[in-house]
Image (cartoon, rainbow, N blue to C red; front, side):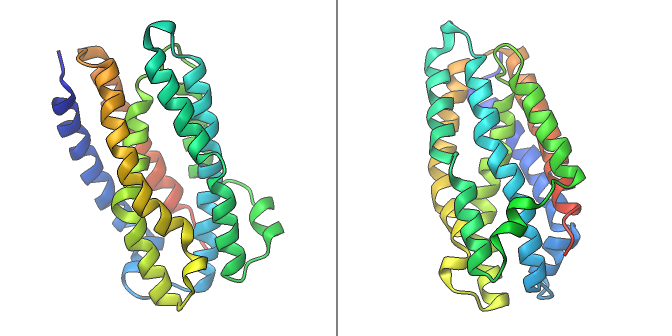
Length: 220
């Protein structure tokens, strides 16, 4: 049997390793070392838009595959999907506020990392009772709560941009903290169960690798 606290400890280790991997990607190294240009920010937003837009979709699919014994989890996933399904519009607005053309961000293709991440998410969401995806949510929401505000502040500082050009990052730095609390409640709905716990941790590990690949593949 694996308790919520046991799984959270394992997920924290996964996230710490993920954070270190992100810091070594070319784009984030540019940002933290002061060589970040406007073209890098444009590329960053284009890359993120794909994953953000897909997020509400795979959560909705996952919710549709949760059985009647876990209706509260289904409801939580659906609420979460509704909360985030327009977030990509905020990201588009930031892109335009930073000097980009709306048609450019809407017409951009996914990079190979985004393709792999999207395929993995939808594959997992299509399984019966896809509880493992809680691990994916831990990685993505954790990134928002821990790194988004920091990155937003750095982008604003490096590029001398107004607040309304970095709203997506700053907004998620505040709101994803609440999402983490909701995440812990969702964990309690499916634990303790050793097999489910292993699925959640494995999903977090895979999502972390694919998310890092997505960032690695972002180039201006």
